[in-house]
Length: 250
Image 1 (cartoon, one colour):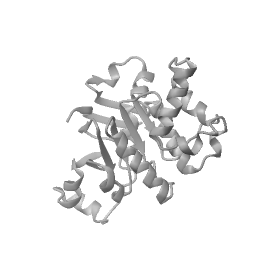
Image 2: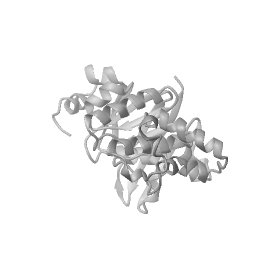
Image 3: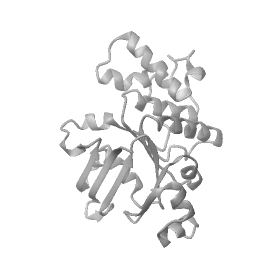
Image 4: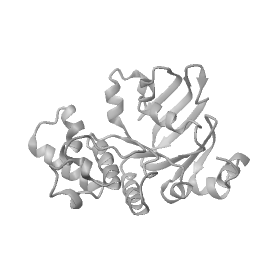
């Protein structure tokens, strides 16, 4: 399989406090990788480093390299180009204070898509990808804030997809959703993995088992173990992995 994201000798700090230490890991294209680990182990910092949003924190510093599709993200002068290539969906469903349609078009308009026909095509295509088109096609001009939590999260994913990223990062995207909405998101991500590298941080080990081909365990800012999800959960090689999966800590 092709490597979409390669992280080499990567370390991060907030002020003098180390967060990630000696991270060396690859994420495959056209696959879902789950990042698991206890709270505070550096999972979100790792995600936010990949699309260069972690550095928006004043005290953040890093060392090492991250490559996306063979190119170092630190050699790309326009940070916005990295964030377009590597989209991120957050834990709390976020709908911009705009209409449903304008939420989808926010990114494409920023990047210069002006033709009405193309805009219309993007809206329908992205809403169909997240199984939201049939639910909202008759109220595209209504405020997105009126959507349910699960619909808002699917809208947030559609908004990211509208700028055609190669990598999709999701930080606990289902933690505030009901089981039905969670099922829809999982089905959606499974479908998207055919065309994207999907990296999801999740506290839900059952979710990792259900949808991820690969799983990475982080503890105290370090990669303890990574590999095929079935292997990680059925016959982990590290005693700490067995302990975490068995609920002994975390």
